[in-house]
Length: 527
View 1 (cartoon, one colour):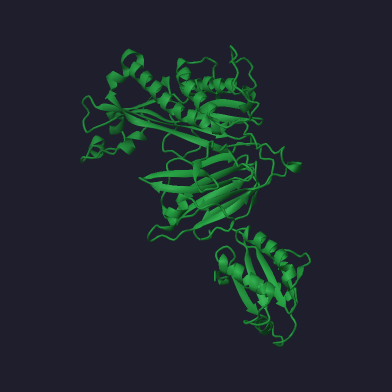
View 2: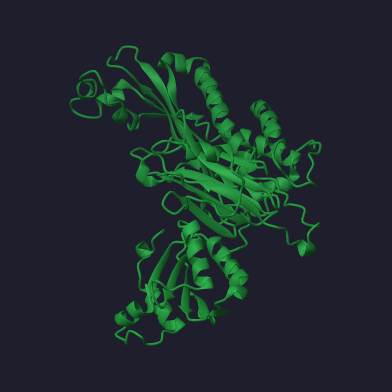
C-alpha cells in the first residue's frame, strides 16, 4: 500500500494533548530571541508541512507471519478450526491454548474499520505538530524529515477454550517512525495494546462503537508518547553561552567529572548539536576511567559517599570541555551485562565557561537515573537543567571519536637532556635541558598529556637508578596520578639488546619510539 497523505481535519483529541506539550516545551532552554507567539487561525501552507511529512501505511520493516493489519482482522473459532485437520482439538488442548497461532491466522477483514495508525493517529499528530510549530516557529527544521505511522496489528482474536460466545481480545501494535531526509531511522516509538476483551457482538454493536472508542483511547496513549518526544525530534535552537566578554570569543573551558561503574558506559559528546554533529566523543567505562581526578574539581558529597562504599572501587575521570558550547551525556548498560534501562538516559545543556559539573549514572530501586549536577567552589551541588537530546540535526561536521585513545608520549633521557616525541606524529621532538629552568615547560607538557584520556608514557633512561631534575619530576607526577598516566620505563641497555646493538650504543629518539611502539598496551602499568 502506498503511503497516504493525511487530511487536514483537526480532531478535538489533539487539543487535549497540545497543552501539556506546550507547557513542557516552554520549560526547555531555547534561544533568547525565540518567544512563543499567538497561533495563526489556520495551518494553511505553513512552512513546517514542507519540512515534516506525515504519512501512514502498513509496517513493511518487520518480517511477520501475517500481512500487516491496515484494517480490522477478525479471527473466529471457525478460522481456528480450519487451520489443521485436527481443528480446535489442537488449538484448545490443555489449559494454555495456542494464542500465538491464532493471532497469525488470516481471519476476515473489515475494510470499514481501519487501524488507528492509518487514520486517527496521523490526523491527531498533524494537528499536534502543527500546533507545536505555531507556538515555536524557531523549531521548524531546516531539513526534511518524515513522521510515518506504520500499522502492524489490528485484530479481534477469540479467546478461551470454548466455541460458545467466546470473548474476543483486541490486539493492536503500531509504530511511529521519524526518518531523516535520506530515509534512515532517527527515532521509533512503539505502541502496543492487548488488554481489551468483549464478545464479538459487543464489539460490533452500533457500528463498532466499542471498537471506535478503543481506537480513541489507543490513539491517546500512543500520541502521549509522541508528545514526550516531539521537543527532541524537533528541538528549538539551543542558545550558546554569551562569549562577548572574552577576548576573541575564547571562553575558558568548563570541567566535568564523570563517574564510572562496572558494566555501564557514560558517553560525553562535546560541542554537540546532536549525536551526529559533535567535536569529540568520550566513552567513560570502568576499565578506562582513572581513580583520581587531576583537574581540581571540588570534592562533593557524591564523591565522598563513593569513597566510603564497601566492596566497590572508586572510578571516575575529569575532563576539560569547551565553555559556552553544548554538551550531550548518554548513559547505558553494556551489552555484556544483559541489563537495560527503560527509555533513553540522555540530556543536552550548554556548559558555562569556568564552571564545574559532575555526571552520575545511578541505578536504585530498579530505576535508572542520569544525574547532571553543577558543582560549586565549596563542593555543594545544584541539579543542572538539561533537555532531551535532539534526534536529528544538520550534521555539518565530521565527528571525531577520542576515547578510548591509544596516544603515547616517548621520553628519552640522556645526561643533561630530555627529548619528547609523540609516537603518532612525525614532527620534530621537543628538546629540553635537564635542569630546573625547564621544569615549568615539562609540567605543561605533562598537564597536556594527563588531560588527554588514554595517553601513555614510555620513558627511556640510561639506568634504573638514573636521577635528574626532570626525570624525578616525571617520576613524581606518575606516582601522583598512576591511572591517568600509565607508564613503562626502559633502560637504554635493554633497548639495545632487543635491537641487537652494543649495550652502550647511543640511542636516538627514533629508535626509542620504535622500541616503545612494540609494547602491548597491557604492559603499561599504573605504578
